[in-house]
Length: 105
Image 1 (cartoon, one colour):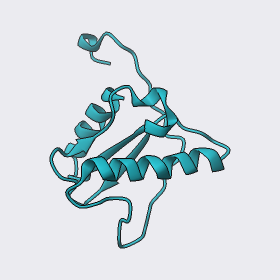
Image 2: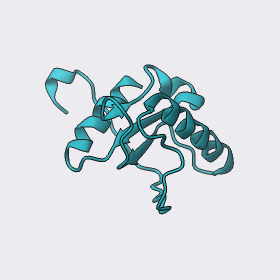
Image 3: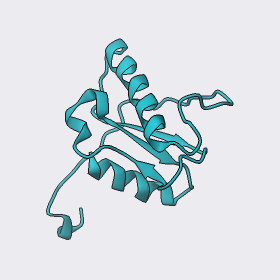
Image 4: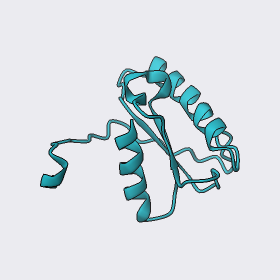
């Protein structure tokens, strides 16, 4: 914890899914808003069908999502229908992008 954050947060990964399809059908090239809507729909299905639930889902893609490298709704974690962050996989810098997007939620 960095003292400047004045917060002690612990993140626990409860599930990791490798979506191995060659074509990422959730992400629409250049349309971050629509892509995030698709990912949130997928997340709602996951939450309703699994024993272990999660608070936040992080979707990584190598496709161009348009605009910024990450996209997440502000205060979305309070609503399962909006609790996803969409992030472009850019290697090591993706860790910072994911942290930034999760902070929005």
